[in-house]
Image (cartoon, rainbow, N blue to C red):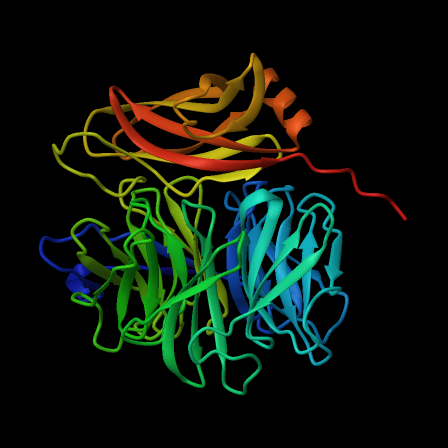
Length: 469
């Protein structure tokens, strides 16, 4: 079957655009066929600038090139492999999860050579890994539907550890248990979603050092989860978009503006600073403003069912549609969220990723005028007795001397409606510190003029070279 492009016009006058309060400019939604035997599932932006996805209908990992929309797929080792989650890792590879009748595995694919490797040692015998995401210290964290656990794999040593979820009604293996999304918060802990035996919805946090799990109960079954630009953890559920504050554990849930039959699933941070989600039942794509909580939804292919979504690098988002089947692209109105009119220029920062010795920072400018961004990477050295005894991203104890050290910087100016991804590489000092300490917690500060737009703590890891066999 030849690839076909399906352009879906989203028009308010046709009733396809639903909004709350003032009208919201509709994004352009386009779908690109992934083939009749395809069933694209999870999706992620790769370090190569392409968009990568899992295809559990064809037992393959796929990529779509944003500039040409060409789709290529790469077969997994076994035709029984059913790939699930996928995410960019700190080593520059894409990491994914696999389920099959013989048990699960954690895989990686090199975006350049397309070499695929799967790892199983350390997984529960009944494992069924689902979602996966980058965590602190060069690790990838995943949810395990078969073992009712959360796991991690070290991207340098490939060692896998799993931590069974025994909090509340989650007490190990059980038919009907359902582990779902996972994401890292600003403190380096992992948050995940789950339900138990078709009920008992949970949003939970696992401390990545102590492995203590805390659970919180939303109104209905949660699915996707992501760290928002406000530092809260945002998640989708049965008929609402929810948020939980990692400091207070307070949960807020918002549904006004969702379609009557809406069922949000995947969720991602857009370059406009809003949360964007896929709604399989509408079917369509929606957004929620993290400050006002206003929700807008936009219809996609009426025969489709958008499932997972990820942010692109130039004012776009990408989603999977296993019903069509296709990979979809959302172009945000105005290229950066449609600030529109004479509104003042508003800078924002999206989800930051790290690969090798470089940070990739999505920035955007809404409204009129320009936004001048200054991005800096720094560490703080703790000095005692004239010697450096610690290198951290944050402040040190007041009884010790501290010294701020710049380890990288970049700048960029955007006009209203523009967005871009800025790469900030470690300078010679930063690379020297990384070589010495192997793992560095580095503070990222993004300023626009005199205002601080965002701060984040990034983890850089020195990776060992793989032995060739």
